[in-house]
Length: 243
Ligand SMILES: [Zn+2]
Image (cartoon, rainbow, N blue to C red):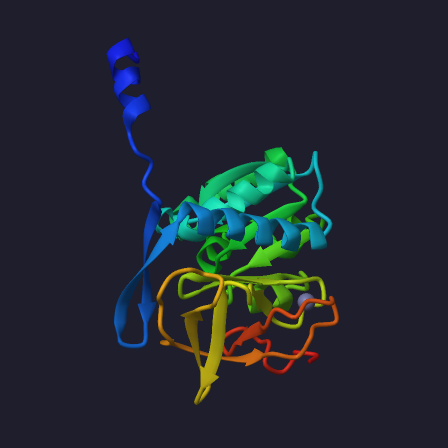
């Protein structure tokens, strides 16, 4: 139970600008970068627009599958769902929690599944027909390794992925996952993706090779966005991209 003196102390606490220290795998090992509350607020606004572009609206429902260490993008994703007034449930993206995903999917009957992993799909496929299960789910945002599994089962999935500390989200055009150009610069060298803080980010992440095979499309997307798009070699997208 909260005591008056505890609350009085809490009232005096500073709220530091730093929200997260984001650790992410890069080509030469783990790297760190700061994430501030102001950056999260901008990321939230950007994701909100992306989800709105997929037609997600108030009163609809979503299931988010993510891992605890992914708070750096999940926090903004949850903020976006809340601002759209979308009801959501959260399950762990690791395979052992696929039953929770299954229960949320059955009980919430969500219009959107966000962050589906290949591990979750593998767990689900032991007890369910994936194509049957997701036939009525309008928006499936899946991770790079899960996208070909879903598409192979005849389920049209869109791509969502962390790109280092940035988030990439595919639009309805399904021709690569957009990265917010106001905050990040994504690049490609020798078939490998890199990321750096953009002018608006207000942090100092230099160009960082990520050791992820993929490519970047900078041409304006048919959805109207100028945000660059990333394609991952592991997803079956290099051949299906329409750019
Ligand atoms: Zn687009």
